[in-house]
Image: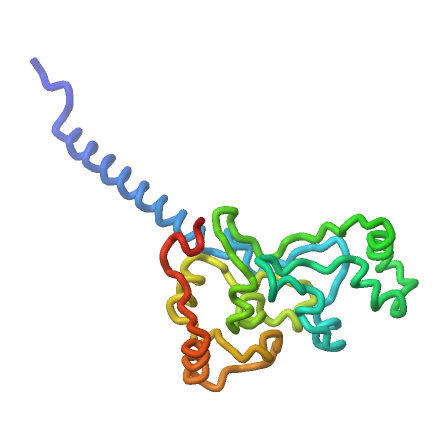
Length: 214
């Protein structure tokens, strides 16, 4: 009885198996790479907001402190966004007739919040507390970048697990004096200051899974 398969069939089967393994491994590597890329993290992506707001003018030109608008950053898990009434505390005198500010005026009078688009996103299974970082000396610019130079705010950091863990394992370079938390231009004088602040504040960030995944 003649053979059903030619001797070359063995080579074809081995080749098909090898290609399947390579495809599976390549697909896994692709997914891992994609998850760390700006396409997945949204890093550097300009976000269109319902109202034109230029941080350069408010932060750099007018010198408005980050915590004036995002007052929850020091006291709660969420930094928060300012209510329209806070905006109008200035704009009832400045540009109070501008058409660009009509949505802000309407929001303030109707108590209907402005639906801002989130810039920095973390998955729902990640726990993050702003106050835990701010009160220990992590500056706004560390995670949010130079917003004083952004016409449209974008995510300056990848916010991947690896990026966060790198800081948790060695937080000293990210620490600064409390009176410099919102200073966009402050630079550290060296690791000695960060190490001293870490020891003084007894900073020991969690690196185990339950630290951020609760």
